[in-house]
Image (cartoon, rainbow, N blue to C red; front, side, top):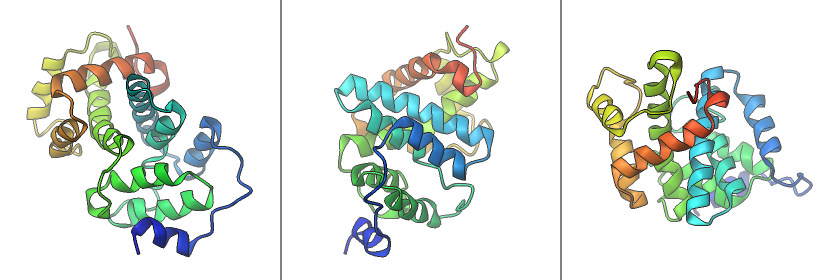
Length: 205
């Protein structure tokens, strides 16, 4: 039995759940996440995912919601493997679609869920890099993200003391799995976060 099947065996999805919308996903996030920094991270990953969905001609709502909810249970279950496995059970109960729950499970290497779809690979690629780009912008004068250069981000990636909780291997592997050049991926995420700057505590300049 696969992990997602096991989740459905343990919890019965709510057949009466309302249609999946960004507002409903935001309500789930804020129900479980009090930290302002985690909420901003969720919004940053959502922005990157929506931008990539537009690029690939995919569903921006589903992709954005996957980005928003990928760490929604982190405050409750901050240690592996409870995060995101326990969170997946909650999402199943709330009627979140299987492919979104699967992508959230697959963003954690230790879940054992291989990244199969473009959605899976995009979420993995956007998670750590969005957090890192956000950190790079926060230390700029005025927290201005517009004009943040790829070379500056890559320089900070080599500085292990900067944003030390960001897994550099995940950043590099994410671009590789998504099949995009790292420089282009960084520039794309910078642009996505620039568009969402006011919502994530940054200035667009």
